[in-house]
Amino acid sequence: MAEWYPSSFAARIPWHANLNVNAQATGTTYNLSAGDKTDIGNDATNVSLVVNFKEAVEAYAQAVTEWAEIILEGTVGAPMPLAPTAPTFPSFGIGSKPAIEGRTRIYAGIVRADADYTAQVGENYGIVAPVGPPAGDVAIRSAQALSASQVSVTVLKAGFATVALDSRRGGGAWEQLLIMTSATHTDARPPVVAGQPEQREYRCQAYENNQRTGPVSPVVSVVTVP
Image (cartoon, rainbow, N blue to C red; front, side, top):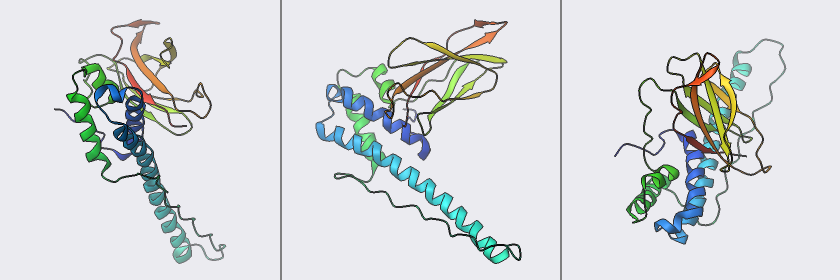
């Protein structure tokens, strides 16, 4: 079976958020216990805490290096720099557990083993590897949740100069966001409900001679991070 679990730490934040949304909504149907669902919720929170803390520590280390260089090798007469502020360790909730990846793979196996499991369920939960688009077709390469409910969308333009990007939220109607001339776009729309995560779906289609052409791409979904 092709790999489905994100290799990048940053990509695991939206991935676990999406898994949690689906597990809380339909996990019981696919044989996940109440305890499993609680762990999945804790894991989604803790992945975000740990990855963000790790990135903050790396930024702090760089700031310390720059601070030290100013003191040791800086310009004569320059003022003494302020020391960088170290990030605070995250505080984990009751019932939090380590080994998130290994436990997540167990949950995926439980869902896939259920009699009601379908390929669409696997795609919704993110526990099957995405199928690549046919050669020559435009596609959504990635949809990455950023902070403040923004989403970074990257498309495969497949040789076309422009691509139409569509989106929908909460099962509503599709809307055209823009005609893309570059391969990336940041969807900065505010959430429908302020301060709440939401699922956004994206698709694209080649745009040529002022009209859409060719097949519409497979849909890619992401859960925003407020």
